[in-house]
Length: 214
Image (cartoon, rainbow, N blue to C red; front, top):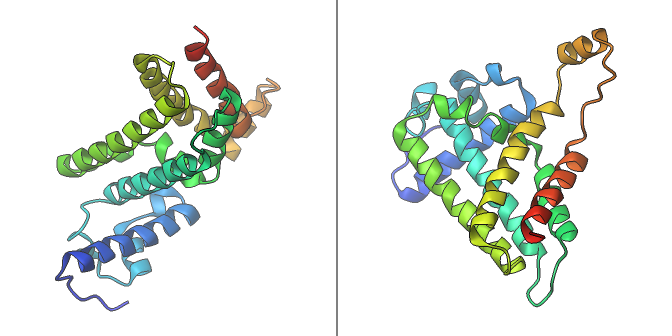
């Protein structure tokens, strides 16, 4: 792809999306440490120096991708519910969980958000990310309010916090490396890595039941 400097806001946004698309492809296909600005530049056809016009690090690009994935996740769950129909806790959490597992990159990025991604970005980029994240969390909160109007506001906020923390912690436990699996075998623990969907669904139902059945 031949690079020409973006002049309009539309052109700049298109450059950002081109970079994000290329980086998402690399994230889906390469080990994390092999994703570099050089690799991204090669995938986009841009000079590496031109990437710095839009992002200061690969982590900033991945934050952008994570927000896009989270927005898509929210839109999917929001469109799954219909007005003038009540839903059980189990039905709600099945929709919530299935939307999560349909985009594994979303879960993978979420699991390294605080330990990796947020540590190599500018204050400006991180502030923008957190503002966008708060908007999505507010939409989730409002959706849950509509589905469960009798639930206390503070309890719904706690559920959101707990459900995101659950996804962040559980996902790495379900994606062990060969070395991790070999170590488990050597210890003769009989440990079997959990299935993310089954474990998350069960735990999230229990969390929501704890709120609604107090």
